[in-house]
Image (tube, rainbow, N blue to C red; front, side, top):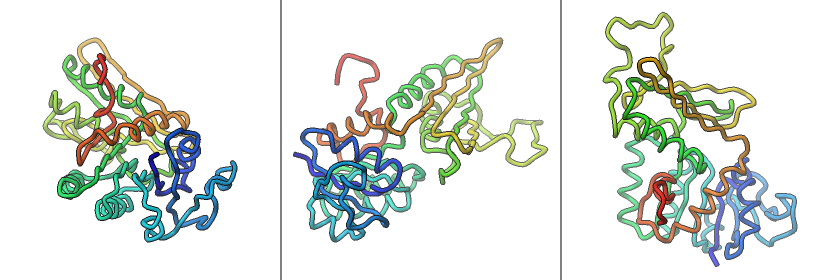
Length: 270
């Protein structure tokens, strides 16, 4: 039995995923951590039967529960503190937050390597999004230009998204499309109109009410355009990735970044 504490349990992702985890065999939700609804039974809070597990507003209460694993659905700033807490308490942690910078990830990896627990950071739990990135890597070898458009709901705090940044990083490892954001002779009549620039790829961020999480990787060469697009239409679509991460974390090293590390992309089994 794996005892799990969910941080950010009252958020949209936290509540949706916790409701699914409660149905799993071999998993016990020991408790939740959040700033709201403290003291409430998690099962009743999610519209089901009482579980006896509650939402807590103190990490000391979580420590007393002795979870084997923390799943964090907060944000990069809060998640950094969650990771420190998990490492200090020799507790494995899966982090679903985005917005980490490279130097922050390097520091987290350094801390994890000197600790006794596992840190698994997953910027996107969607298996479809992982496949979209891998397809983009394959396509990058055969095209002359590439740009990324990521579209998210208007409540998302970070831009570009962690998925867009990871996609650009993966593409650049195979091919550098351009060395600078603006080419010789190119100018912006409105500053920023060419978007951000990450790892040789232009990235454009849209934030609109009604969206959830979407991304297009657009490739161009003489006479043709290839668009690879992934759309997340419901937060429950993240659950297969979450439960896969939970089932696989015991096999991982001290620090892992990205769901692709546990998905059999090429076939043939893990």
